[in-house]
Image 1: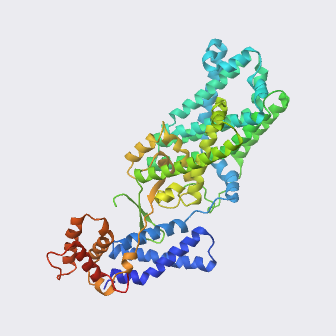
Image 2: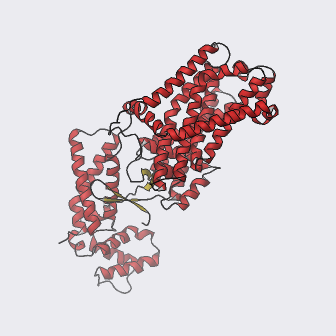
Image 3: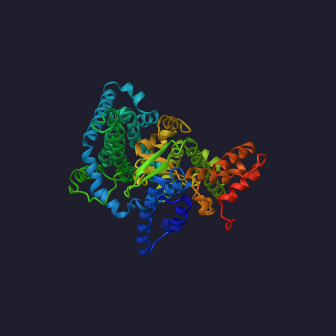
Length: 328
Length: 240
């Protein structure tokens, strides 16, 4: 014979209250070992109570109360382990390089788009110098006309620190834009990449035409390789996301988008610290002639080579299963 | 409740998480924005102690410096939502006040990456201003998710507060003789009596009295009498 509702409540309520209290203490701080095993016991018993309430007393406040109690207990007990320093280490030693390797296709495509549009921008300005009026900003053209480079004179006006910050934020905007526009199916990602490539190519070409070619090449040498790599990875992340929208393959479109977005975000977050480093190099090392150009070139080539060497060969071992960083 | 997320916990029990709608989400957002605005105001006055004409100084800054400021502000907002959602189990201060929470689409607690994505995508949802993209997506989506939620695989659910006080007052012996759903309605009736329309009090009260077998009430009994009779029948005298 089924127990009546008031009898059920009277009999079980003490444990419900106890679970609520224990959860409160779990939220605010530490539980002793005994309390943890007590929590485990209480939680299972209350889960059983919910099953009983759903069967006998569905659509009552008691059922709703138990539902809510179970939901908050479940959320607290199954809370993912916070990713601390160990998680960060695993992310950079294993997860991030692996994700880059897994999305090498879109990254190559985005690099190709970037390279092609850079070449296109350079050729256009080289062959039709007047197009520089469209592709290169007026400020830059003035500098080039005066046979100086904006990076040389900029140092007089603003400090390297604020320049590094400015460059970092600009890079971040490009990187984030390339990723976020992936939600347009990758179309706007490609547009962002093309614009950046065209602009870069046009600036280099008009500098060379204007007689400040060595300056610009020496400016780019130190940070260029990694900066362009990061933009290519950002574009690749955007294309990876866009691909899920257009061609989800055997997964449902929603699943594909969620999974690829998770990968894309990890790629972007993984790139962020390098954006800071490269912004510092770009702000302090690259401008002017304080560092000789062979040194800049060496820094650029060495860092670029090391970056990709690390990404492509870092710890090809299975990640430990309990170190889950992926949103699943 | 029509909209709810069904979650099967590892304990083999199905928990139902009611999905939060546009209204409560907008409310939580407003609270967060007000809070951030208050902080900004305090910071502004603190700065104005040291810098005369603080506002004009800011407006007089160059475009690139302003752009940096806006970018830093955006980064700060992102950190605000992400850090709170991770540390407070899916809740920002506004969400906590409105009692809603971010969970992953399988009902499990949100992770750093999910929160990071959904808050990064605020930028897109916000476009061109005041979240039209997000609102339209939420109206189309059955689970009221904005673009950021769709990409991050998260859902906003309501944390309901249900009180069992009414049950504690029940007289076990009497209540056991009453059907569960009639009992539930009677409890709700007593709880909500004060907020009911006067004629609804009498109408519902009389029906309930019949179902509870209270035959002693006269035809002309007032709503107050009916309530007292129901209360006397259900509640045990040793509780208030």
